[in-house]
Amino acid sequence: MKIARALNVAETNRVQNLILIGGAITTLAVWTQLEDPINLPKMFVLVLSGAAVLGLVLPALFTLRKLTIKNQKVSLILIGLLAIGLLISTGATDVRYTAVFGEYHRNNGALSYLAMLVLILGSAIAFNLKSSGKFFISFAATGIFVAVYGTLQAMGLDPVSWVIQYNPIVTTLGNPNFTSGFLGLSGIALLMLILISKNNNLKALYVAGLLLDVFVLFKSGSIQGVMGLAIGASVIVVTKFWITNVRHGKIAAITVILFSAPIFLAVMNIGPLASKIYQGTLKNRFDYWSAALSMFRDHPVFGVGIDRFGEYYREYALQNQVVQGQVTDNAHSIYLQLLATGGLVTFIPYLLLVAFITFIGISALIKATDQEKLLISGVLGIWLATIAINLVTVDSLGVGVWFWITGGVLIAISSPHLNIRNDGKVKSKATTEEFPSGYLAAAIFSILALIILIPQVNKSQTLLGLKKTLPGLSSQEYVAKVIDAFDPAESSTQFLIQLADLAFRQGAIVDGLKMVDRINEVDPRSYYGNYYAAVVYETTEKRSEAIKYRERLKELDPWNNTSLIELIKDYLSVGDKSAAEEIAALIKRNYPGSQSDIDASALLVG
Image 1: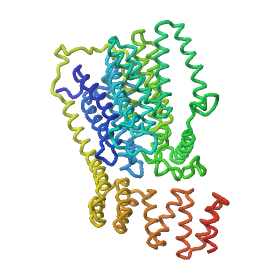
Image 2 (image 1 turned 180 degrees about the vertical axis):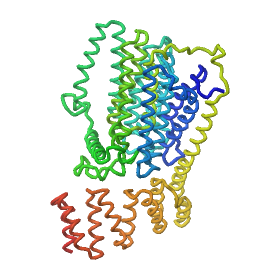
Image 3 (image 1 turned 30 degrees about the vertical axis):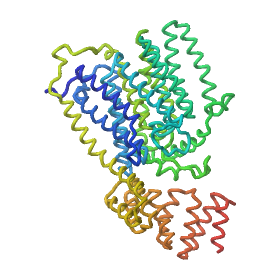
Image 4 (image 1 turned 135 degrees about the vertical axis):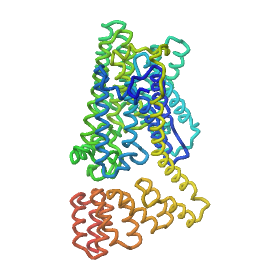
């Protein structure tokens, strides 16, 4: 048994298939029996797929020091540096549970990112130009499925009873923006297949799929996917013209550049096209980006903590936001999210990796033969479109998984020596399988992944069960169920916040406060941990007990005048008028002449 060896043909094919199937199921995974039916199932599939892929490619990883293919070697080193940076930032995060598993209903923690890094690593090792066809087909097929589901939602025929407050085109991704982004990218894969397919029946299917894709894309009401599709299609079309006639290719490239400038300005609400393209939500993003940059300035090396943007946002939010008091748990820009939460130790390797893959992809396109150029342009088009969309979006697992797979495929096809590798059937003794050490490793890693993931699923099932079983139970019986779900050693503050909320709604003050105490023990800067404690003590006329929590909220949410007014009341209740006057003066400095300023002054007079 050889522990360190290159993958044989059969193993390479299995790794390719596992990566693509894992990517597709991650995008499509929905489990309505969970309190989080969208992102938790996606994390489950993603991490499990990553564990299996890691095991299968492990024998090849032990041979990396012998690699002579420069592009592949440098890329894999950068992937390793990003993984190390991510682990360092995770270790430096104040609440490591959140750093590992991610924010509530986001799950963009280190576990998900490490799984995606395994997928880019596996793709870089296993794919080549010939097998990139599998990549296009898998991406396109997933896109068609999402488009069909989106069409059903647009027609009011959704088989799932989602609670949706805005655009119904959420598909399996949970949000119209994510649906738009994904369909824009999968549309590029469909366009690629239309151009390279030699089977007319398949070509007709791809055309129908692209039309459906574009229909749902526009129905989503989001510009992200439209811009992504335009970028990717431009790369492919210009390359196609260039292959046919260099002069025509140059004209096509100049045309794309000339048309892209006014469109880019319109996105920024500048120029004659702004009324057609600009979306007002960009103003909100400016608020989020400003807060992200402020977090980075105060925490430049390690960031505020992996996926901890939400607990720091109120502190760093602008005093006068577009929507006053609006909060978010994400910077709505993957680059700024990583910069703010992971600091330079994560952001620099990420940026270097993205820049290097982009460079070798463009270089490969320029140097490739005419037969290779079109395939490379398809992968590069998806890559460039994704890195553009990432400027203004949240890292949704269902979309983000394809970013990393695409990056790995682009690394592989940008390494010329890999593109001549035999992809035929196993014929020689050298390519037959020995003892399947990779499969054994895959089984071990998958079991470890399940041990980590199953408790997350159980908690989500518990929450959904509690939210569904209230009807028909007495308050006492229901509270008993809530208490039974509470573990004093629980480290998931997000789970505890949900439990505490359920307990307080049934008047279980003592038990709810025990949960809140645990929340604040794990995360002293938890907004809801401090908020619940303050409100409960104030409601039960124990304002002296509420003071320390309101003081914390003053630091965590400095522009919240409602909370500051309550703090004035708390101070007055214990006879500390000087402290109350300081808070009133703070309100006046922040918002002179406002209703809060008037109310604070009235309390002091009273």
